[in-house]
Amino acid sequence: MQVYEAPLRDMKFVLHELHNDDGFGNLEALAEFTPDLVDAVLEEAAKVAQEVLLPLNRSGDIEGCTLENGVVRTPKGFKEAYDMFREGGWCALASDPEWGGQGLPEALNKLTEEMICSSNLSFSLYPGLTHGATTAIEGYASDELKQAYLPKMVEGTWSGTMCLTEPHCGTDLGMLRTKAVPQGDDSFKISGAKIFISAGEHDLTENIIHLVLARLPDAPEGVKGISLFLVPKYLPKEDGTPGPSNGVSVAAIEHKMGLKASATCQLNFDDSIGWLVGTANKGMEAMFKMMNTERVSVGIQGLGVGEAAYQSAVWYAKERVQGRSLSGVKNPKGPADPIIVHPDVRRMLMTARAYNEGSRAVGAWVSRALDAEKHATDPAVKARAEDFIALMTPVVKALFTDCGYESANLAVQVYGGHGYIAESGVEQFVRDARIAMIYEGTNGIQALDLVGRKMPAHAGRYLRSFFHPVSDFIEANKADETFGKMIEGLEKAFGALQLSTGTIAQKGMKDPEEAGAAATDYLRLLGLVAMGYTFAKAALIAQAKLDEGTEDAAFYTAKIGTARFFFDRLLPQATAAFLAIKSGKASMMALDVEMF
Ligand SMILES: Cc1cc2nc3c(=O)[nH]c(=O)nc-3n(C[C@H](O)[C@H](O)[C@H](O)COP(=O)(O)OP(=O)(O)OC[C@H]3O[C@@H](n4cnc5c(N)ncnc54)[C@H](O)[C@@H]3O)c2cc1C
Image (cartoon, rainbow, N blue to C red; front, side, top):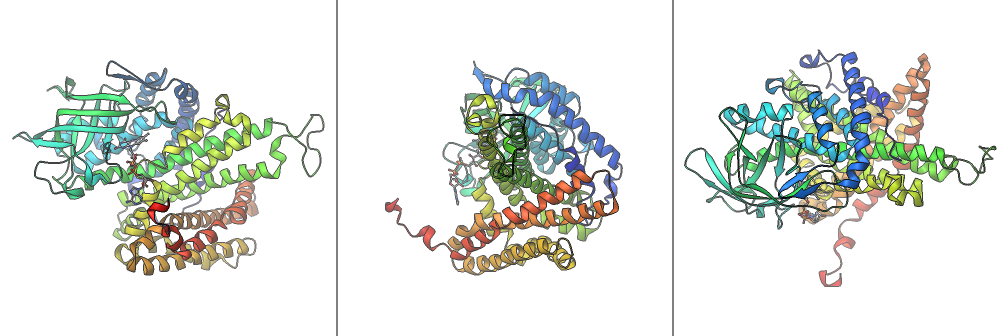
């Protein structure tokens, strides 16, 4: 059974308690968002997630989207839910008030995103992509385009897409063929075929605004010749309402493994009118603005599904009775004990729990940096936030989605055979979570971004935005009476990360394949250290609360328990990653292609 109750207590902990010393807080521009207001928003979002979106998750998966006579229909109930969502102002949460948004802190917005993804990942894509598209338009489009499109997109009556992928080009966008021909005024005619376009066509909004990558006639080859265009499904009339159709048609909807209620479309653009967003041939710059926002959000998708899978597994592990506890009967009135008594079931539940709490804590840290990047008045804080975001974006995307998928898989295992049967609802989590490791740049490409671009940037400056707080924390706390041993573990993993950084920098300079061979392990290692750091901090805070006396003892005790599990059972993966990195590319690349 799909069970989900928003983890509000942990959300409030990461928002209000965990990161107060990171230097990204106390932003005057966000002063109106008092803790009470923030908590009230979280509680309302939880209601929307639990009461409106969760009930449509499984039915949406079963029914899927349909294409009939060029019209795509979302599953039953989606349109009503979307209208309710839009009318409640949820589409406009994080957008700029200049365009009708509510300007909420990202630290809060990302937690509401998590709830939406937990309750209905497919649904989350419709408003999520629109938000990404508005970010690119805000950053790069002309004032005229902003005025014409942003208000409707921010309020959610029009939605947005990102159209990059073509049949022959996914990762390597330099090969894309969609054409843009200038019309002599400020418009262009766009022609070409795009595939895999999320929310490419649907029945939720009055208009759909596509952001399309295409090539101008005289464009240089490769990624340096790509431009970005805004192409509406319907051309707006003078009064701003949707007018004539703009030559965008749906060739098919993709039949896919999961995410069935999200319409993934093959789109044809046939002399469709579009306008340049940003500078000609510099489309990747504008698209990256959108993709970076989306990458953090896709990481949150992984966390969201991981949390729902975990909660569904906990529910089952308390209900299902099989076998007797190895430490003596726990349910004497029943024929067997609930499976939650068994160590191996605990291993699975604790792993998922630790990945979720670790991801949420690291995610909150990055979201606070997103707020500081936007609102800090001190240039040094702003610069540090920018460095930290640049470094952590690929980590959030890949680590959280890897962990989310692992948690979903563990949930199926907790259910045993019943987990493999569709009625249980948990196999959907595996199918849904799987895509987040692929889109927005596969996790392998995120790892290459980390070692190839982020690690060497400005002689390691981005890395320092992460290394400094971790090493300061270790120095300040390694003699702690209660958690000294835990912090020693963090010091060891951090040492492995520093050594690996040196190894990759050295070997990669001579042979880029060495960096490529180390990338995925390096991202995991950095991610584990980030989680370890936040867990150690959390444990210290929790202990202090327990020492001073609190009504919330159960929460803080559990936090320490989860932190201890992370250090005992998950952080040791850091040593394995370090050894794998140290071994280099030799065995990975040894076989000739013909030998495969
Ligand atoms: C459900 C769904 C929704 C999507 N939504 C959108 C959308 O809204 N808009 C959009 O434009 N696209 C969308 N996509 C496309 C998605 O972003 C791409 O599938 C993804 O970027 C990978 O591209 P590809 O499938 O062509 O794989 P390929 O690029 O062919 O990659 C195949 C494998 O090779 C690896 N690889 C490729 N190049 C390298 C390299 N240089 N170094 C190391 N490894 C490499 C990859 O990591 C991967 O493992 C969606 C896809 C799906 C399935």
